[in-house]
Amino acid sequence: MKKQQPLVSVIIPVYNGCPFVAKAIQSIIDQSYKNIELLIVDNGSTDDTPSVLESFQKQCTNRIKVYTFTSNKGAFFASNYALEKAKGHYIAMMDADDVSHTHRIASQVDYLQNNPQTIVLGTQATIINAKGKITGKKSMPLDHDTIYKQFAIVHPMVHPSVMINRALLPNPNVLYTCKYGVNDDYYAFFKLLSHGKFANLSQALLNYRVHSHNSSLTHLKEHFWAITKIRIEAITKLNYQAPFIAFPIMVLQTVIVSVLPENMLRELFYYIRGIKKITFHFKFPEFTFAKLRYYAATFLA
Image 1 (tube, helix red, strand yellow):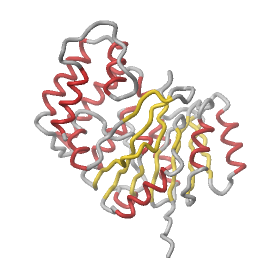
Image 2: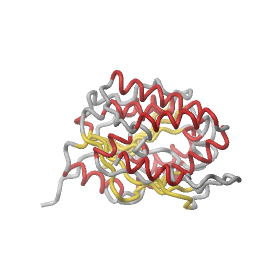
Image 3: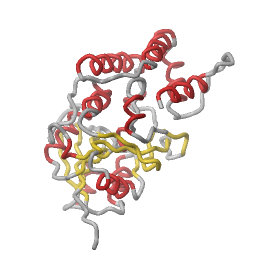
Image 4: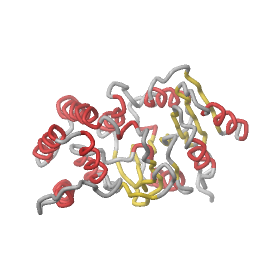
């Protein structure tokens, strides 16, 4: 007997995504898993994005729905809007500049059907540049316990790779609070840790594109202070139980962010997150950042 294919709603918010959005959409159309609806929210784009979306909608009238805002209300506001319209049992997130591998949706649905206690399921990711060349990888922990611990010092999920079991959401029509800007997914996932298990598949099923306009890779100091507020709120209000070793690591993070200039901090961030090799032009002591990253991962495993 053929296994039932529940409807999956794929949500893509986009703002001025003309250079990449066509490849993102095509990667969803080409999925081996076919019971998909694609909801795209145009966040007030001023480039040719509307024309690209119109073309795809005409090709796939029954599968693609496009909603248009007159101004940019933010990606997470747009995602919440699409979630209200979505009919799927599972919700898959996707960024307009990334590319999903052909079997991404099928692999995630299969896992969630066999693990109904899992609320958020991500994947590993391959890093690509604006031209599509592979430049690195994002390696994420696999099991819930490790993911839970690592939330204290890093974001252990690749947000545009996640699929969510809507039945386990405290509110099936709202996911993001829209109060922490580009870091709101981090806060949203902290809230969901008490509503189900988290997991990451071992396969890299998303090409995560890094380019000059990534909102999460600019103003890193500003983002860090927002992340710090999120962690404090998670511990004090969301009953998150941070492992003891996380506190000295958070202190070290604060010192590094406070001392390093933005450009140097960005290089360090790229290295730690596996985006590219470090390119500092001076020699570090024997205790390198590679060792620091290794020890931190070991302690939190």
